[in-house]
Amino acid sequence: MAPDGVRVAHVDDIEGVPGQHYVEGEWKPVRAELGIDAFGANAYVADAGQLIVEEHDELDAADPGASHRELYVVLRGRAEFTLAGETIDAPAGTLVYLHDPAVVRRAAAREDGTAILAVGGPAGRAFTPSEWETGWTASRGTTA
Image (cartoon, rainbow, N blue to C red; front, side, top):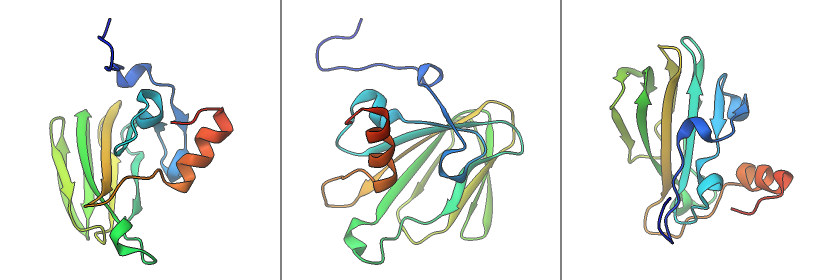
């Protein structure tokens, strides 16, 4: 049992949502599960050949200061990231940090059961959940 003020979960024990964010695997709402309010945190699990991180950037054209920096951690398996058109092989243990929110990124799982943790937020500004996540948590009756 974890002490007061600590929450612990295994990525496999977080209920997955299939096909969320245009990915072909499952989205695991880590932030909502653990009640994180300081930064965004999501996990994605997919099998070989499936899109595990959808193609996107994190640039907020209306408010560039709200643009997110992101860190991807390959927890298990292997992924192939495409970052600004460049391909990077990412086996388990690989850390991919995108300090430039304008970089277009995507990743495909290269092994079954590949799991990636995505952590992000704006630099120098308080984190607020994305509208898509707020809508999802509201539909589930949660508020994290």
